[in-house]
Figure 1: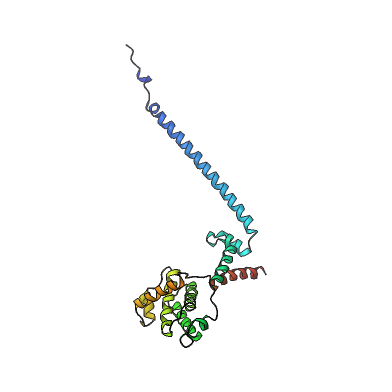
Figure 2: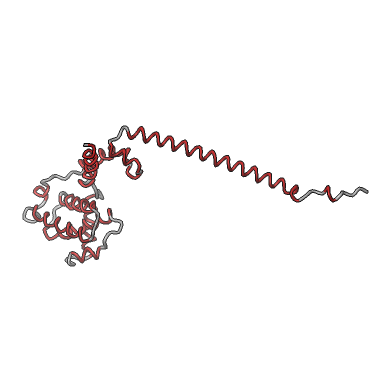
Length: 230
């Protein structure tokens, strides 16, 4: 009877060779996929670089510099400001709206001026963003151009406008109790919320318009570039 010699028995390496081969094939495929992904990435990088070079030739110098920052969307800057200009005209407030809408004995231009001056002081006290101030004044003017109010309501109108604008613009807006505190608690929380609802309804939730601040940012960037070129 034939007995297999111990030297002819398969070794441990021979037993595992199919598994090793499969692992090698898998690693080879993974490297190929990784290489293809790297090649695709390089192709897109080259295309993006070429696109930016071609685009920078069509843009003004200040916009071409900002191409490095994707959040600035410099390639669309001109279209954005053109749209903002159209929106500004659509929500334009007549300069003589006080004489047309408000009762002369109640709300005058001087009354509005004192209110805006107070708003500026509060804005500085809470260290709010510049855009918040512009939005607040816009809400005041927009509301006064649409609805008559009494002089006694001007203060609560200013506080409510500031409340709405901080909700819209600020990351950490001041709480209503803080705004009431700087107003010396001349009105209650409920009265402000009622005015807020009335304002939102009257304005139909059109709370913002392109402000002078945004256009000034654009003009400053362009003028600085021009001055440097000179």
